[in-house]
Length: 404
Image 1 (cartoon, one colour):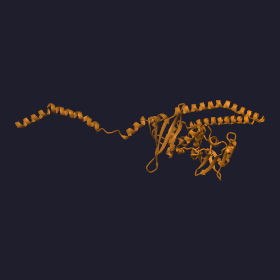
Image 2: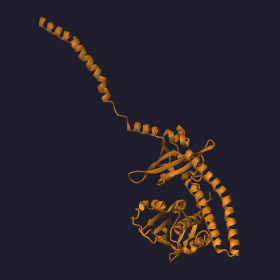
Image 3: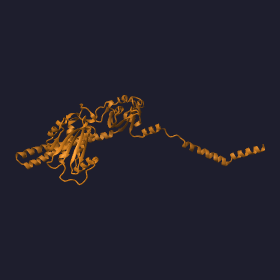
Image 4: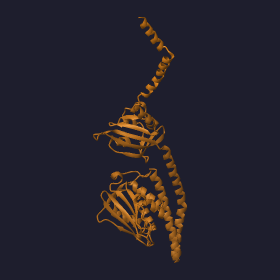
């Protein structure tokens, strides 16, 4: 018994020794570190909420029935959403604030990009105006449908960017261009009219050389007036203010009429038409289409040898009509290889200085839902192509519209 008591005393003394107490304290200090290493990672929902809160864009998710499933703080501020609007029909929410399309015309709720995405459409970079509190906020909107595994639509996702300041600057830029073009046209009109009077007086006196010089002044004044109009159109197209007045157009009748109307602007005797055998009908704004075509023909005539003809060919292919303006090559061939197709347009513009005319023509063609490109050969022959869809932009059928 005495030995057992001695053994217990030795064990208690060992436990109470400084070395034993230090070991226990060290273990206690390490325990929180082990707990930190085993702490669970943030959930996927928490990470998603943090990302949506940090982004500068508005993000909205719609359920398949059009209910607002979620919207980050930025989207709620842009659209004027309250907390109670989440879980409500987006149609009812949008009905509180008038909407406008990129051209400023009132936009029906069903044409809002999110509801279009629920119908299976993909919308890219569409400007939508929201009228609220006496001013308009412009939002650049992207919307895509959420497609489930079975192919059904599970909802839609939208991103919104505030472009109000950019739209304001574009409107001021357009206003400045209009003011400048108006001020330039006044003296230009005087030059044009007086040159015509001078040409008539010189013709009566039989001064042919001087009469030809007056004709050069008249042609330059007309060209300058066309360039001013191109500048105004380019500003309107880029700012989304240009609306097309679409109607059926018969190509075989339209082209001869266009050439006849512009006989004073360009030398139509040097333009050879090659039309298809049968009738060709497209949907287009004839005024804008005429401007694009005349711009291309002017460039073609200015960049070929004096007196040479350019050929305007028209052909129907699938669901589009293709125009080709062929500029004959120079007498000397270039030693450089042709530019690759992706850069031919920019290369030709750099070589020949086509300038604003080609730029405006391309924008007007693209506004019709078409495309414009240029091909060149080593002998410096160039062909300007543009193709227009038969049904107009996005396959639209002709309908009345207001011109901006």
